[in-house]
Image (cartoon, rainbow, N blue to C red; front, side, top):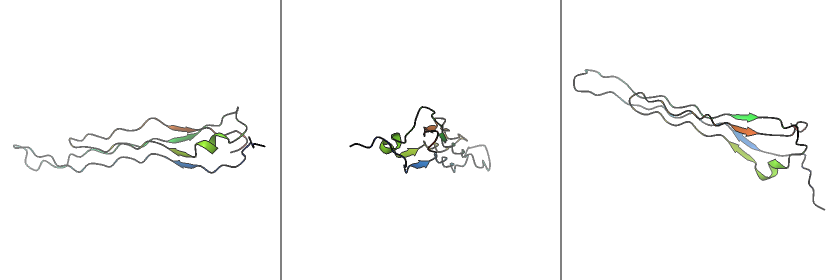
Length: 98
């Protein structure tokens, strides 16, 4: 007999890391002591738990156990900030199993 009901599940959830900032110095011919001009790193994406009222089991977590959001991009020279990640990772557990 196949068990179609799963009551316990162990999953791994991690939000995205922010990007690294850049170390850069402005160097121009007629600008003495140009100074730093590195950009900031972008923010990483989030992981959101959204309860699904239609689910009654944790069967979906049997097949996908790892939920990792995307990382932000690194900054670059000329004060360019890294790209922020807006695509959030959504985890949908059953309402009475959380």
